[in-house]
Length: 226
Ligand SMILES: [Zn+2]
Image (cartoon, rainbow, N blue to C red):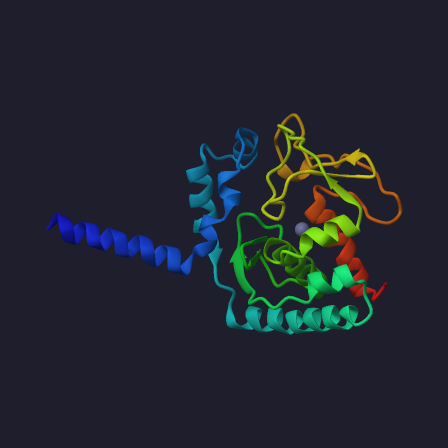
């Protein structure tokens, strides 16, 4: 009897892992006490539970619109890689199966593993941005792109830094400027943090190396700028 119950539990865990592999993204294990407070939850487990309970599939018509936008995004990326720098080409020219899921609690579009989460149909620009985050996670050539753009790894840690699912790297500096996205003193809204850094007219320093590059490269792809 006990053996049967154990077997059912093991099968259930296995089943959960098989269909919801994104639930095991390192993002969930990086939550600080400030992150938890900012999201109004008591523990990492509560956070995961709330996150998971608010994931659903897009409707057929929503997924149709998303796929149409995704086709345009892929086409623009392909177009851009015809004339871009080698480091950008090596980074963008990487095949990966990307999935879309609806997340109604954390409404800002973001990624976990090879999943893009959003609370509504996202436009071409957002899809390019989120696709870049997924490539940052999987394409090893990303390190060359980071160097090519002039970012340098630092060993700095910031207690009030927001845990961003799309920032899974160490902190970087750019031209000796450190930058990160932090909570305000009240921890009321995780979006109300400040961006520390400057805009040198080329790469805008936003949140983290991953976000800065995602915004910068999306802009170049959209406008086909080389
Ligand atoms: Zn982003």
